[in-house]
Length: 451
Figure (spheres, one colour):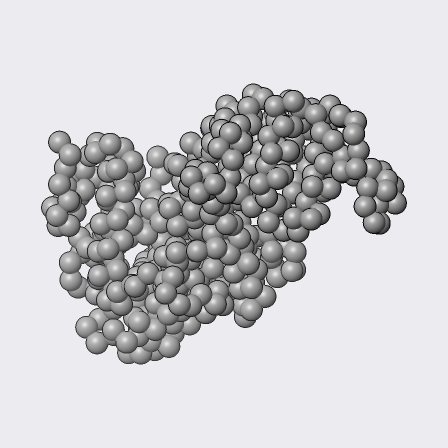
């Protein structure tokens, strides 16, 4: 296999040679100034680059290096740029981080740490490219609309595929904004009823006095204003699926009528006396604890068991590892096309904020946030301030870069070990590092092997 390409932007011939020697695992491409660096970037499209800010014609300052960084990120926003600094260049390095550089490291100290930083930059770049391929790939019916890489959500999707062909009533549970109706529509499309109608009603959005007629329809003259016979949503869904959203808000009198329908499969319109047979599959959803409501007498226990033949629970977005960033990229592509904004990209600080935010409003809040950011963004990069995320839902984040790296490193190691059941070799492969390196990192972070 060909070696990954590493672009080294450095005007010091001695350091060029040293970096080539230190990183013989990579196909090192060297550039000594801004013009040649941009030419090599266009030609080779490297995933990672190291950049000395002191480039000619300003070798003692950072003007030329920072300008080079900005042009690199404009041409190739996904390239991870690692700033190599001297002892007195910390302020310039921090400025580079603010402009979108991936990380910084001193030139002459701890080459093994620099090697680790570069290795992690390649891993991050590969993950982002993988995410992009998933986003740009055509959505495969019937699970379109469900975008995830989280193991829990993927398991839920497999459950949907198993449950959909059956005739069982399904209860979809989850917090507001998690995508319960999206899951219900996937159940419908995967079933034998997929070509028939999918009708939906939100029990919390319709006044109690109107809800019965919305559900079951009404006869002409049944009440003032009933000028003609009108079929209800349940009847209109005949042959297909009927989705009751926020079923926990269904009034008790209507709970009894819904239970009778589930038992007899017949309805009566308001003001009518004729029993009408209707063949529909019932799918319900709620963010409430129905079991608790049954104990309080606010929800019929017999109806609860009728509706809960199969229960699917959608985890909140904060528990779906990596999905916030994946969904943000999806919504960004969607809204950029709608708003005619071209190829906007998230800056590193924006992606970090998306990943650490708690998202109390779940996917719906994320969708609205990204749409706002696209409208507010100047230029080709979406910055953290464009997201407008404020308040206590942001996790407290250390400002020291070494602390940030250590925390992220530890989380990555613990997560990979958990995913592969403690298998060191597989965890190292997942992280893109060698087993000895993983053992060293585990010892450094105080992570004990399961063996």
